[in-house]
Image (cartoon, rainbow over all chains, first blue to last red; front, side, top):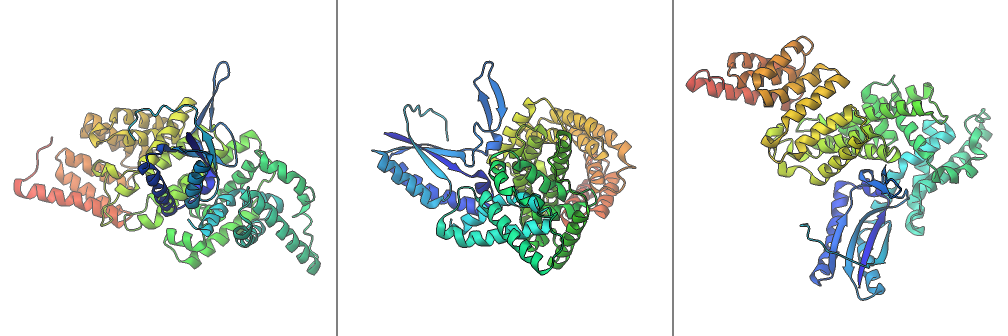
Length: 122
Length: 423
């Protein structure tokens, strides 16, 4: 089963990390990712730019273009992973490993219904 | 990352909102700051044990407010001064708090906090220092370091600035639409000042002053999150990101300036450029142009060029033309002349800057640019005169060193072969 692990965090907090703190977190996360990749379980990984760079298209008639993210929330969707796991327990284990090196915020674990891996170079 | 580092990050990011709200309650900057400090101390004790609160800013406001009210009441018993005014709207504060934190009210708190730092009576350096201290929460020591002055001198500067702000009439009622727009543009200008303070550093101090650029970007993003549909704030944020993206390529290991044409573009920060380009893209959709957007668009054209020769100088010339209309200034025309010289040759550039000679007679860059045009035209003696003048006007040793490099080249070129022919 494929699981999407959606990363929510307060982007003000993440944005106030120093370059060094940010790099240290990314480094530790890449260790967790490498382990999954070696097992052939890691799908696409994305880190999203700040929500200030986001634009929302509301599917009204006619569609309405709004600046900013879809939802104004305390924590924002900042990135996601797609990971192959046997079951929810295993997906939660992965999320715990990620959480151990990137505290704060929350992960939403969502089974994937359809994934087209696409062909973009990374 | 350790827990303490996480808590530090949460406190820093909650600061503008928390101090802004506390300032509205107490209507006194020192009281608000002190309340926030006390709340932070309690957070450092409580959060590691009880876990972080879901909404750190709300927690800090609540705790800071309660501590400060206790202090005020205690102070009142000892010396019965009429503090009633200062705490007049505290009775119903509890009730309003929840609504305010969920609602969009807090953005006016943050805007007010930023806005009092740009009081017109304050000289630019004091505005910046005040904003870094109050809004960003940098320590006096950190700010002093960035400004290359002693801690005592910076302490004094900030105290003086606070005094002036306290004497001034700070409007506490919710601003109207026109007022809000005015505040927004004053605050944007101040954020730009903070950035420039870091960006205009010379090579030997660039690293020390880089935090000013980073802080300016953080404040710009904060402002943009509060005012998501303001194209000029998008433009400002984009401009800062696109300029700062080049930071690692702007100086060589000796701290000498590396001009845009000679920079190693692989050292440019790609995610920052991506974010800047995305923002300018968004801003253009609004079709409400402004100086920040135009400057960001110019920076974007540089950022998009993989090699210097790929730069779209024609478009840059047009954009500077637009900027000249919005913000007529000889400095803008000087910049435009550089673009013109790339499109139509140094003669055209020179023609464009001649009329500026009087107004820019004490401006380093004018003589640097003029010298470069003359050198390209092979008018080496005149170029030397211009470069000599530039050195005399240089603001930093790196600027002077850069011009000296041109002079050395002129020297080398003229010795063996005599005066080089124009191109």
